Length: 278
Image 1 (cartoon, helix red, strand yellow):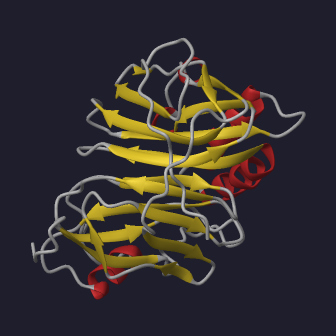
Image 2 (image 1 turned 60 degrees about the horizontal axis):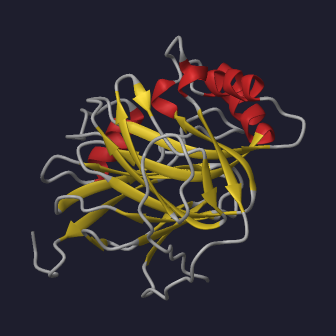
């Protein structure tokens, strides 16, 4: 499997052209700014949130014949609390766009690297779906080719796979080290790391998702937002060492239930960069 690696060329986080592979995005309660143009190739989204609710910045590409307003309306439906509406919206979203992932960031910044070909894309903060000015908060991104700069080989990262049978993931991840997230499932999916209370067990997660147990999480998610099937993205984030739940909040587009309710959840230990026990 090819390891994603980006040429890091810094640029302004405001309208204009960025000649390189890194975009810095700071999210506030009123939205975010982003460049209008980047080069094709490996693109890294460095996301930092100043919004107490966090940020879920995703990169999407509309399929031919699909308008932005159509996609945004389907996205609103996909994130509805009613399962029937959510499934119908989710199925429509899957037909509307190719989802290339992106970064969920809360109290800790996160960087996600994905590969983009030339074309027109959109950056969306999924947290803003219910905002009345949601459409105005979406940022258009034009990717031009050929790719700029040379790629630098990087060590093989840890790998998290989302499959139709659940997550396949290491029991331990090193804080600050890159993790390759691969969607091998049959629908769009995500990989979120959420800190849990000390001593949380798999049975505790089972009880929570069954509706019979308490809330085990101590903070919001950090990770990779939804990607289409067969897509991959490289996540880098310096989460504090400790116990985390690896979960997805996406619904199964066949059953209407959250995939996490159907067993797509794991406990993961994040250890310090020096490998010591937290």
